[in-house]
Structure formats: structure tokens, C-alpha cells
Amino acid sequence: MTAPRLATRLHGIRPTIFTEMSALATRTGSVNLGQGFPDQDGPPQVIAEAMRALEHGRNQYAPGPGVPELRQAIARHQQRHYGLELDPDREVVVTTGCTEAVAAALLGLVDPGDEVVVLEPYYDSYVAMIQMAGGVRRPVTLRAPDFRLDLEALRRAVTPATRLVLLNSPHNPTGTVLTRAELQGVADLAIEHDLVVITDEVYEHLTFDGSEHVPIATLPGMFERTLTLSSAGKSYSFTGWKVGWATGPAELVGAVLAAKQWLTFTSGSPLQPAVALALDEQAGFPRELARDLQGRRDLLLAGLAEAGITAFAPQGTYFASASVRELGWTDGMSFCLALPDRAGVVAIPSQVFYDDPADPAGGRHLVRFAFCKTREVIEDGVTRLAQADLSA
Ligand SMILES: Cc1ncc(COP(=O)(O)O)c(C=O)c1O
Image 1 (cartoon, helix red, strand yellow):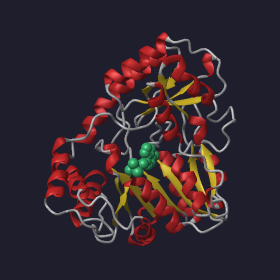
Image 2 (tube, rainbow, N blue to C red):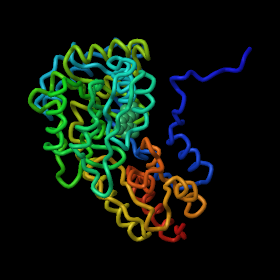
Image 3 (tube, helix red, strand yellow):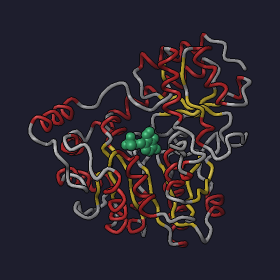
């Protein structure tokens, strides 16, 4: 046999940073403030429903678009929170987490050479999937310290080859929640250039200090050109269940389904009815989680300040970005690789979420800390940081 050869569609895509940094945390016994998974599970009633489903014959293939009760619950969720009226049979599809929704949306809508405007720093699966779909990424950078969307830069990123805009709000890793005015700017551009908008809203309920999450699909003229993606992972602290969804007009949802049926066809049969129950009967859980997370965010920010690390308060998600420049580091990757030895803590270097990791005006000096951990874990992490020598 000749040596196996990686397909060119995967060339240059680095392995996901989360695997690398979580392995580093395990190997060094460090406090993992890197990867974004909570260390407390979601509502026990939802787990009980999943167990009931396992015991009562929900163990074979679910229908490709998802079980009807979950599609109906997703439609009710979009109605209740945002006033969006969806046909659960044609305008909702259940996916294997938001990750598969992103993959299927890009595979279903992007032709080779199509340009995709995407907020940078980006969630790393976007880069991989745009490339696998043959698309060309056009990043628009959210810059520290306030990480706002520069609408002029967005306008400059659009060319005759632009096919779609890939948004993420609340935004990982910066914590930016796009304002209605910023979203209106995106909407104006999308309508003017006849673009599709894919919007990843997995952190839709995790906002702080009264910041309002506005789905761009609710703006005038936008429903018909918007695919809205979300998942139960973040809202209900079940990241391992990988139950997500895409909603929008039938034509766009159909494009997701057209690709998705050849990726997994279907997944999580016994988990889908449990997520339906979560959306209908545990509707208050995500807001409670957000309230609690706000306290944990403040604990992390105060602890980082104590350790001499300048962090930027996020308006949503469960991540805080911080600069390591003030500690004398120019490069977040070197800082994160040194951190387990120096302090017994793991964080994520944000520069891997930028096209140009070396750009000092981008994310070279930024690192990301997760605060979806228990208060004890966060306290342990920041105490370790405060006691360590973190200078370059
Ligand atoms: C912005 C964003 N989108 C999607 C995902 C993945 O969602 P899921 O676990 O539902 O596939 C994550 C997880 O960290 C994320 O941060």
C-alpha cells in the first residue's frame, strides 16, 4: 500500500485546539479553564426523560429531520422567545449538535469559490467546514478591547463572489452580543447583495447584565434569507448529547437536510424527546443558568485582575478573553503552553481563531478562559494564577 495521503480539502486545517489543550490539562493535572463544557449537568428531569426513552423503545433511527415532538418544541421555543412562527415539518431540522448544523448548512449552500464572510475570531469548525465545502473565507475582525462589529469592514468584505454571511452571537470567544443596530447593518448588507445569513446562536440564552439577544431572523426582510442554528448543549448543560437544530424558511432548511442526511442521517433518538421536554417544561433553566454564570464570570474576572491579567467582560457566552501583553507576553500560545507548568491552569490561545495568528492588532496577545466551571474550580484556578509567576 502507498502511504495514506490526507485529502487536500483538509490541508492546513489544524487539529481542534480543544483536544490539544484538554489533553494538556489531563496530562499535567491542571485546572481546565480551557474547553467550554460545564462540570455540572443540566436538569435531572431531562435526564430522567432520556432514561425513560431508552427503556421504552426509543432506540432505533429517529426520522431524518428529527422526532416530531422535538421539532414542535423547537418551533414553540422560537415562537415563545422571539415571535417567530415556524412550520415544524418544513422549517425545523434536528442535527447532531450545532456542529453538524454548521457543517450541513455550509455543505448544502456553498459552492466551490463562493465567499463566506465570517466574524473573526471564529469558532474553529467554521474554518474547517468552509474549506471542506470549497468556500473562501472573508474574515471581519472583532478587535479588543470592545470587540464590536465594524460595519464598514463588513461592507468591504463583501464582493460579487460573496454567497453568505456566517454570524455568531452571542460570540465565542469574545463574549460580544451583537446589538440590534449592528444586526441591522448586517441585514441591510444581506438584503442589498442578496446574501444568505447563517447565524450560530448556541449561546442565545447565556447573556448578562441585561444584554438582549436579538436573532437576526426577526429583523424585517430577514427571515426568508436566514438559517438560525442552535443546540441544547449550552442552554441546558448537555454538551455531550449533541442535539442541535436549524430553523428558517423551508428552502434553506431543506438545503441543511439535503446534506445532513448523508452525514449522520439521524442521531440521538432517545435524547431528542428529552430535549423536547427541556424546551417545553424546563423553559426557565437557561435564564437561571445565565444568572448563575454571571456570578461566576465576575468571580473569574476579579481573580484574573488579582493575578495581574487584564480581562474583558463578556456580555454573553461562558468565556472571557484576556490580554497577556501586560504580563510581558506577545504571544498567547507561548503563554498557554507555559501556563500548566507555571500555574497548573489551562487556557485557550485565541490566536488560533484568527486567519493571521501573528497579527498584533488581532488575537496574538489574547487568551480565553471558560467560566462554565463550578465556583470551587474557578476559585482554585484563579488562586493558582495569583500565586504563580506569570511574567514572560
Ligand atoms: C459558537 C459555537 N458554535 C457551536 C458549538 C458547538 O455546538 P454543539 O456542541 O451543539 O455541536 C460551540 C461549542 O463550543 C460554539 O462555541
